Amino acid sequence: MWAFEARSAAIANHCYTVPINRVGRESFPNEFTSGDTRPAHKEIGMFYGSAYVAAPDGSRTPGLSRTRDGVLVAEIDLNLCRQAKDSLCFRMTQRLDLYAKSLTAAADPSYKPDIHREK
Image 1 (cartoon, rainbow, N blue to C red):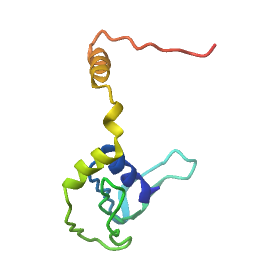
Image 2 (cartoon, helix red, strand yellow):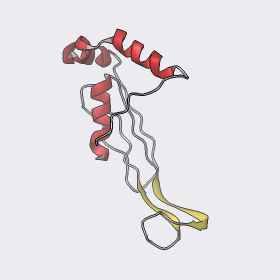
Image 3 (spheres, one colour):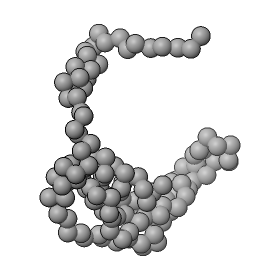
């Protein structure tokens, strides 16, 4: 999933995304449980790095190392954001007036959501 999540977000939002992750293991001084029936432990597990830059057209840079710290430097073309908006036409059918009305209503402290439950 890691390889696709940021690319999907970049395409849907017409912008660059940069998923970041650390590498190695992390330990804590006190034991904790994960709620998965395993005994208490001090370690979270592996972090696999692999940060990359995803472009609005779905392309991406190669990922960083899965085992070593690193710095990713990438040159990006911000014009690609506008080109993606224009070519994919995702916003052609947006209804900002309806979104604004719904969000304004939901932000009102007296808002009561319309909840439907199966009987």
